Length: 363
Image (tube, rainbow, N blue to C red; front, top):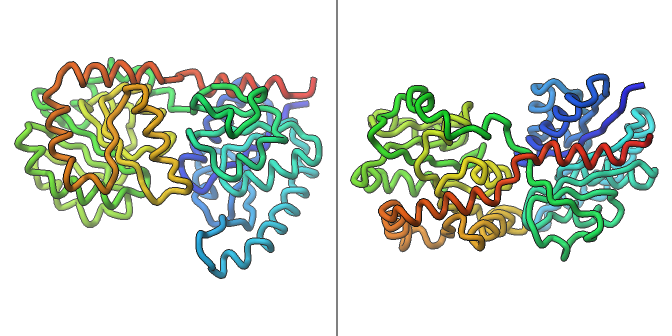
């Protein structure tokens, strides 16, 4: 009989992408396995997971807001409903292992799985874990992490440093530069600046780029600007500038990294992991609006090892131009950032996570 896996994670691309990557690797190693994803009813996983070819069940769950709202008042009811539905899903599907990549839906499923004695694996993408994973850690069988020094949150004997799953096509970006320049119709003699604001886009980064377009032009840069689907109508007018390409999102991440000389990016966990593998000099501008300030902590973990530069949104007005200009004119600094960020890459993450899962499968 084939193995059975339940995988749960969602709310953001940062939780969904690793979940799908783990499923794909498990499927490659267990071709006759059955998979079921569990997500939150109205979140993006309900579209993204079926697009990746997997079945998904939705729970009626949402996170707690930081202020008094009707949603918070509903939280106990939603939690009870999600725990009950998780119980019935687990009883019916009978998984060998349950894997959680974060988000409130994964909290409900993993909680019930551990109560039923089903082995559970947590995959924590951030350098500072969210509430859900901290609560689940005591009962989990294995915790796959992407950063050092998480033993202040998780039991040391359960932790394995695996890294975050990243797209396989990012492994060879160095060899794709010519292809990338053709693909994006770039000028091979100019330097390329890549702007990454995450799947929805980053308002403050977009405002910064708009304001600094002339400045970048004076420094001789052409720009690949991923502004996010929320903002594309506001900024697509800049496509008329021959040195600027504005897009809601980028399909060929491997080529965009291959083309880039310098990157300005948010510091969500998956972006950070990809940039480590691509090995590009990066200025991180963390989103201040993320639970527990994850993004700042992710960026600091790289900066502390000499792998990137960090600017807070509050520092952009006063410091951005001097920091950027100093960086791009300092060849040895650019080289050391590249070297140091590459050292932090963990390119075999998905396979290593699957190895931990395999150890738990009941023989």
